[in-house]
Length: 130
Length: 108
Image (cartoon, rainbow over all chains, first blue to last red):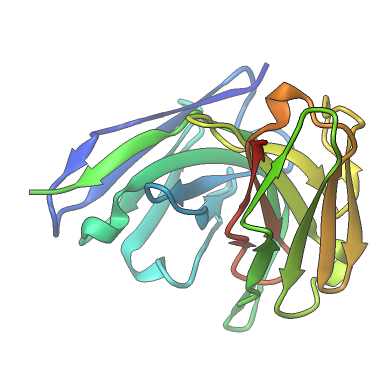
């Protein structure tokens, strides 16, 4: 059974970089045509898609966060990671990793992204505070 | 960006009743690329429906999705106790991927 588990510091100081890891078990990141990515949920609010990565390293990001976000893949350890730089209190949220089903491509300066998420991790809470 | 508006924000129903949840898009969602998720308190979202009407693996058939263009509906035919939760729609026909604000189904 495929499982995803997020891990990382629960507290980050303003202006610093938030770093999280997602470990996939029960299946390989390198098999199938899936992307793997991140979604977050501020306290008491809705869901926001952050971005996704393929096992080749190809990445797609939400344009609203693109300047501050890096998603990486480590196929040897079956993990993906998330970095969000220059964090503020607005980045306080539960961060989920999830398997993405669908496809994406870039055409010119535009990204065309067609994913839904079929398997989710349990989430990890990150608070930005001094 | 496609904005999804869900209504009502909260609905109060009794077990056994029918729930009808609406998701309206600010522009047409291509190829009916619309998904529905269920989120119980303290848990991660769970995929229920993709491509507007396709149930995900293991989802009971009391859950059904319909709609196209800008108007989509999630119907729960007879509410079970475990169905009281928050439901989100998500479009994946335009970039970036966006979610609706959610509908809470609470016990009356």
